[in-house]
Length: 117
Length: 111
Image 1 (cartoon, helix red, strand yellow):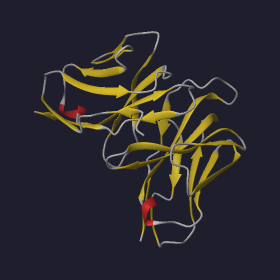
Image 2: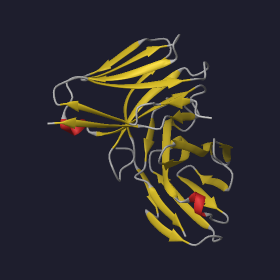
Image 3: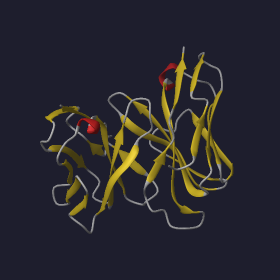
Image 4: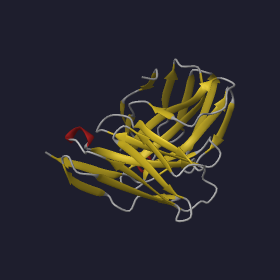
């Protein structure tokens, strides 16, 4: 199994508060992703990173920001959480070692369940 | 706008029979397709993939078929087992960087 951990695994917060989810990998993979899973929508890409300090937007990036200061960590921040951001968030990694072409297979973390009241 | 669609939210199959899960896509630039399996409270796990240069890829009980002209792929599971009961997502990519997922099909294999 790919070494990928997400924290926190569960969080309840109030509307308007900032929230940061952390994804940590021990595989030295180049690509890291944040997805959210919602009923009727499947998995939707929020942001992804293709290297340290290199990030790009996905399908549903509004209201989210990301940072990647080290290969192993990819942070997802909700600056001011809203109820529509209640979801299960999955981090994923892919590709070979840093610098290699992305092979395309994604390895997912166990998910972080966020509830915004 | 959903670029990858799984029109069957659920499917029930008898143990030992074939399970066929379908997926349609709209973006003709997609050239790599994957299937993932997800159990409750776990992250999705990779099952099988296929590139656009092929029309079939097989791995044990799992076979994926790709029909590029119809923009359609399917996953066949033969024989189906109770442990196959899960939600199955198809995914597609054009660049190898962004992966677009379908809404998932919940498969129940009845013993």
